[in-house]
Figure (cartoon, one colour):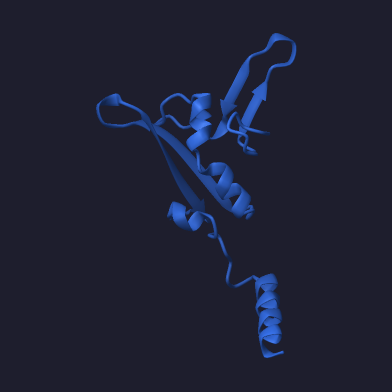
Length: 118
């Protein structure tokens, strides 16, 4: 579903049908450490970009909204998990690669090597 910021995110849900007014981020919904979500948080959220860059089904994301110093402003913290091992957010864009069972990546590397030889 498209977020208020205009990005596609599978964790965002909205329903305005027949007078309903429901907007929620389902990553934060079950996170007790997070502050309540606001639609304005979508403009600074990295989750849609991570999901767009890495479509691995083993990638699990956790989003936490915290307040900044003196309660001024809000900060979004994304944690990525792959096979129950935490990975840094910077690597979440390309993370979760199974090197043991990655035939597609091997075929791609072989094709690149052949094109370099030609």
